[in-house]
Amino acid sequence: MIIPAEQINPETLNSIIEAFVLKEGTDYGELEKSLEEKVEDVKRLLKSGEVLLVYSELHETVNVLPKDQFETADEYDEPGNEYDQSR
Image (tube, rainbow, N blue to C red; front, side, top):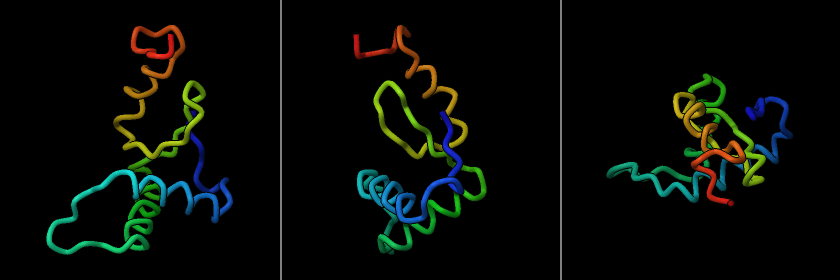
């Protein structure tokens, strides 16, 4: 399920994005970005629609996914799906 970012408390949204940024471990090359810069980058991507906040009922988690990967990831979340690892 897609969660509209603008409907989330700003403090909660920051926490979700920070958790995402910290677990991603993205390499930014020679110029490392601060946590604040990374969070602002993700906010910009959310605002532009390039990434989405997605709630997984199966895993009870919120993830940041590129828009083009959302449909593929959604297939994995359907209970009973051959990709469902919870069985």
